[in-house]
Image 1 (cartoon, rainbow, N blue to C red):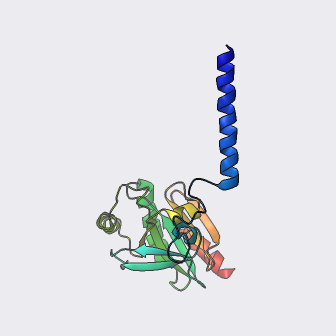
Image 2 (cartoon, one colour):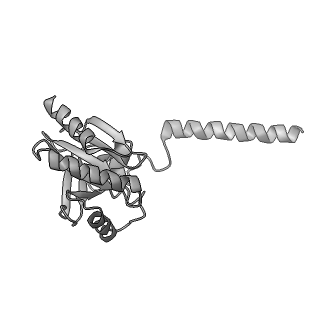
Image 3 (tube, helix red, strand yellow):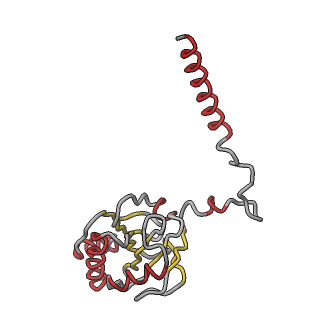
Length: 191
């Protein structure tokens, strides 16, 4: 009986010491410069917040390159989608209707996929899906899931309207109707 008490006590003490070490020193390797590049910066530190350069792929309405997120002085409707999600597919139809009703000068559209959360894990597969869903605006790939994480995307589809500083002005998860998106964009533009 006493041996069990001793083991529990030693185990608890070890946990407390470990937590204290993490709290004061951080995880192993943190701050030691091991991940720093030649400028002394950690690549992950540069990518934790906006602006993001989202890689876009060659697909209908989308050209291979990058899109800045946010884009200073411009609203951007960002749709986070998954290729095997029927609700994502239905939302793309609503977004196509909204895009047709909104002046391009008012808001740019962007759909983002995340290969870390999506089974379509190649640009070719994303482009095939985009063709099947009749997407007609830039299709971005969030390679490390950093944009998804920054904006707290937990479910798909998630659609949000960002202003030129990257502030979320409107956000919805799940299925959308085109008139709801149009109203959100018009309200943001009116200020």
